[in-house]
Image (cartoon, rainbow over all chains, first blue to last red; front, side, top):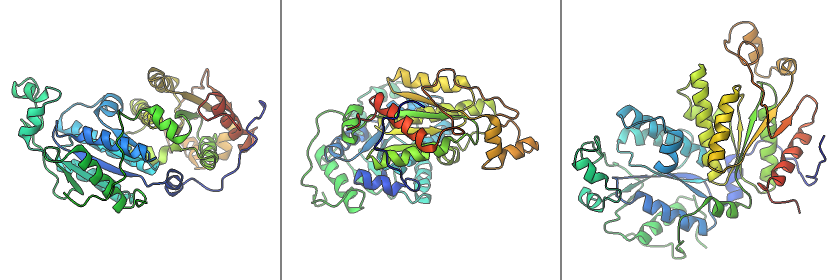
Length: 207
Length: 207
């Protein structure tokens, strides 16, 4: 045996539950699922919300194309089948984060209603909060912003199957919340989300 | 606009980084990868470690067959190809948790050296701590325990490709730590792990 230094180790009875982790963190876990066109402002509001939550002392984590498409889902393409598997996996990862007590901010175009409903169902079955945040701006607005130049390429035929151009975006029928970054300020959007998280008991009530 | 109640929202400049989350949680994230035969005691020590970490105020999360094989990896079987993809995905998920600031306790037989080395490499490339914990007991001990009755079924030919019986277990060559649940008490194992986490700066030094 190596020398033992950790003398102040206390034994814990029973497994750690989600509720235990919620108590440790001071809030519940939940999935906020940001859906909308490319350029609608999904990531912008998710980043802003993450910053505000952090400064309030709450733990959130953003899942997006940067850390998912380039990591766990790097073996998936953009066929309908792969898009569906992409969203399914992200839904399952979101659930793991909720189970860990984290507020998962999942930001993906996720254009197909059936795929989003699958993720909702996965959460419902596990008794987990799933909050669909529809970031709703007119196509013209998103295309005019075109932050990554993707609409231009899609219009030129250089990208095939681009959501809003030659592939459909199926709007949520009953999203928990709708944000419109064309008419609302970023601060207004974040305040709406924080209020909603408090009303649902995911964050503690405001002092 | 709905009535705004969240009046005490403060704006955060810049994206939240892993370091920001580490500061919030009071520790660093890391992956502890428990590998060993079925019945070696991987899950037992992971559960015990999770309890002790929780009572110290630290956030860990266990990834295991229950929440991974039945969730994100439910579309994978036990062929060599699927086993490799299983471990790759778990490695990527572990990285997401480390990025979120969480101590990931990943407990899987993970019998192939190449697969574990792939996960190590993924962490190294991202500058993340990967700690291979070899839970090393003789096959006879694990088979004698047989907590799920799987060795019996494998010996009877009812399960094919069972690690240790008719599929190899490739021992780690340079694991960060070796635990032997046949000769060490559970408390000794946990204390070794806590000491190691402190020495590596993942947990703050003991007061």
